[in-house]
Amino acid sequence: MNIIQHNFPRTQFVGEETTKRQIVLHHTASGPGVDGDINWWMSTPERVATHFIIDREGVVHQLFDEKYWGYHLGLGQKHFNVAKLPWTNLDRHAIGIELDSWGPVLPHTDGQFYPVKWDGRRYVPNATCKPVKYFYEYCEKNRWKGHLYYEKYSTAQLNALRELLKELCRRHSIPSAYSNDMWVVSTKALRGEPGIYGHCSYRFDKSDVHPQPELINMLKQL
Ligand SMILES: [Zn+2]
Figure 1: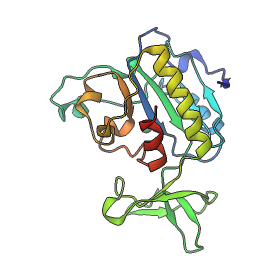
Figure 2: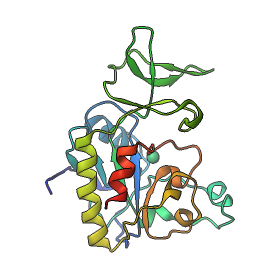
Figure 3: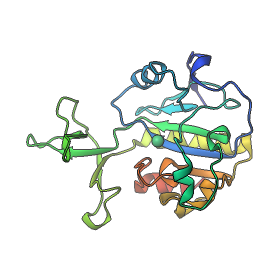
């Protein structure tokens, strides 16, 4: 598949070669284009980054080689306490993939949907951003992490993700079987068991990725 390689500086990821056992899906909580995400990571001294970002047009961007690793899980002992496990460095063995997407959105009085921002008391639509065209609505009693609306992962994005996951699972001998427990904090994920997970499989406070039916269907068909 066609992958755009970026010249991501070596100081921004960990240049240690490790085997990869897990693939972790995230979303960026940002607007169209990957440059802002990459520049943000480069603006901090921390070596936080994922190997791949897939933009809304379905273009796959690679920041650094899969044999290296970066911090994208943000796990401390408190996250492992849930499963009564000691902290281990799961980032070392995880391939990170970001989907370029806003995450939660809200309708504004103008009838359009905007990404959310926290005003100190509650989430409000951030109308200084461009409105979001495509969103998915969860049922009231089935809100995802407290939010009713999320920007939709695009068809092009999910098609590209499918091809990338197939390729990565094959290359690193990672099982691609779908498991419904990726949507809750999972002992399997925290134990470092091989497979495909979301950031939400490791941390209750993470809303990425969200269980959009098209994403679930794609994962089931891998
Ligand atoms: Zn994440």
